[in-house]
Length: 213
Image (cartoon, rainbow, N blue to C red; front, side, top):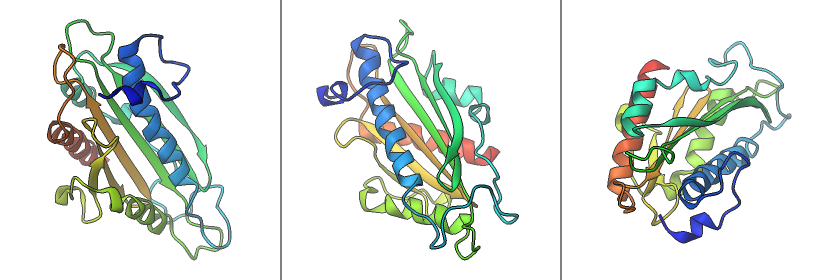
């Protein structure tokens, strides 16, 4: 992981040592990006405060939706560092961050899963599913990691932080956008995962998660 990640502003929950700072910064970058994206696409007649009858998800799934064995497989020795859920503009969102930076016997890694349940606008002219699809489409210009057919035609993979061995998968289920970020070190020696390794890990988590949604 490159040093510029460590220079980003860190969340309050990040303890003051370099390993966690670097990993937490990558997760925070994705969390902020997801929050901004969630608020940029609204129906012409304004946001809705709650889900419409045709919106599959009335609220974002919680962190317990991500199977514990899936987390442990991707991030051995993982601890849940952040778990938040609440209202977003015309949506309900949840974000979950696991890291293994406190595990002396395992490589420091981070797994961040973000859920956004988008609501049909008040006029019912723009559905929650259409908003969700548009949010993922906004990410396509940076989709250097290609597609993931098993997750649907709109699913994509991109470098979460270009050049730093972190990968992000984004896919849609009805009105729900799911984003999975994965990265960190390949071993305890401090060498970062390659993008291909991070991509494989992110896709694996996304596919297992999709099977449970």
